Length: 136
Image (cartoon, rainbow, N blue to C red; front, side):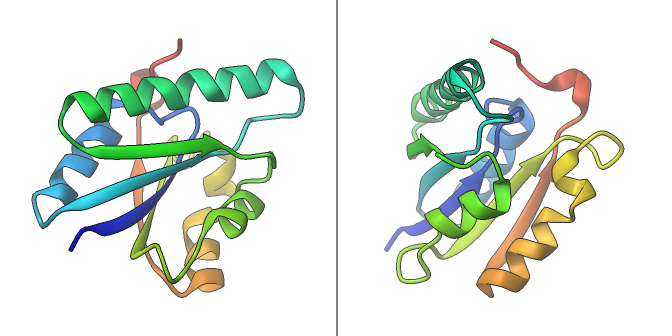
């Protein structure tokens, strides 16, 4: 049976570090990935950027043989986006991908720990160096 993993990412969604972490997780057993990408701000431009990042990530992961789907959240607040997307009956764990703590808003609000407390799910964190983020 495939484990279903909720992946929360935005600027790091199509990074090689996240793809590598997901490949490593797939080596432990079959997985299905469901992305939720909160836009960095309100407005069409932020939403379009998030959609481009999501599509880039899904394309890259599918090319490597992983089953991946996802959506851009209607909420810019990452915590709200996770709580809206997370279903304990469907998701086996959550991976939160961020920029380094020194520049990441999500790390500034301690998103991985907050998600863990709110969901009681296994939460893994992947940090991607800022210079390694792919901008489309």
